Length: 610
Image 1 (spheres, one colour):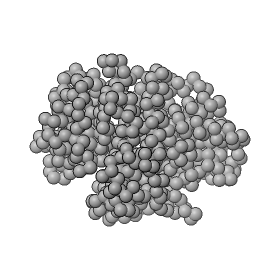
Image 2 (spheres, rainbow, N blue to C red):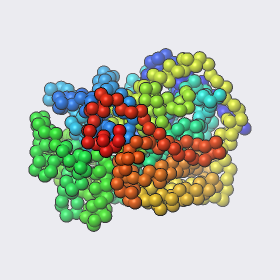
Image 3 (cartoon, helix red, strand yellow):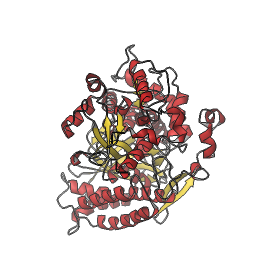
Image 4 (cartoon, one colour):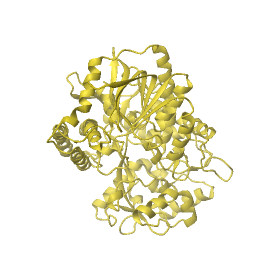
């Protein structure tokens, strides 16, 4: 068997985005040895693509904001299917995490009084997103890296983790390979933190970068971890749709937060027609009222809570654009027009510099003079590895998870801006708890050589195959199929077809032959990624098939209503059966205590049966 390089670290963090860096910083501060493994280059994590801001109830733009209101907005936006314990922790701790970033050197935009500026975002009652223009994620990563690299952690860049090892039922390490030279590595660890992000590269039109193939979700599932809420995949309403080469690239919600309006091909501002009853009292009824609200925000004299309907939750806006297209009122290339050209040119360039340059360079559109064309794009998975809300430990002892790879906080739909604060709040908790658990462990468990030999053989197998398809073709077919059959609108027949298609794609994936050697071989990488992409796609399709209602980011055309009597009380749980089959069950979070229940909308709660 090929040589395998061995490493030993108390805590291994897989992923170098916001959650991974924050976990590694906290674990390093606890005095344990830390390894950080990242699939791409350090600094290239998907977090850098987050533009709009980080949600935290600092109350700098509106003194009425509070953690209680942030908690309410998060629960309501998630259609009351989120873990209230995580929503409480997140709302209470987010402000301190933002202040901490500032102490570490993050340069947030400022109000005229010198406070951290905050902007409006969909589903948030008040302006709540701390931001740095429209490059907030980039500044967050820069700050965390600057803090982290001085703390002694070992960084392994351009490594892909393919398996988690367990010894006596507890995590004991992981196996990875170097994407550059193909060398093989085993990391012995007392605890592991998963911070691998999402799965959206499983869809043809997505905002995710190439790393988002779901391997973190898959290796947790293969190690026996429980997965939750995998039917809930958020389609961000505003991705670029033209030209084809940039289809899916995100257009930040900050455009709408700064006053951008959505119009159809007839020039109508259509979002007024799509305000759900549960939000009726919070959103403007007329264009004049909506523009007046924006004027109040710009002037800093906010007097009303009734926001423009463009700031409804992402699921509502995405479905509205989809409906306008279905009614024959789409933009030239099949989406909608997003227009912020009515605002002062210099203000647009100041507040949204990234968007200005993105459209200028990629689409030859000047957003200060003409509207953007946008449409829904697969953006975020609310589902993931189930974790303890207070420790972030999964159902596998010694395995922790934080960020998009974990589930619980966002329920059926995530509010914009909650992702960045999610990373730093729960990344910190995961790092702290993983370090403490590693100290209690006290020793490195042995890893069975048979398991190491097995994963090495699996990893090298594609290179020995001949006559099979190019793995890129199978990946392309998978993404197209998921877009068509498990996308923004779903039906029983399409989901059944998708599950059957995934079985066929798995057979094709098992005999792909990338050719070449281990050195700089993207075909080999894709051949290896396919197993994860197929299993996470299967989780999504299976959970979507079983949930016979529409809720949040999950829309069933054959079950268009929200079923409060049953589905509002349970979350899907997927696990691997003893025979290797994918099993699905349902569970509920503990009942919300009265003091927190009183913060929520009673008319919604009695419908949900909570």
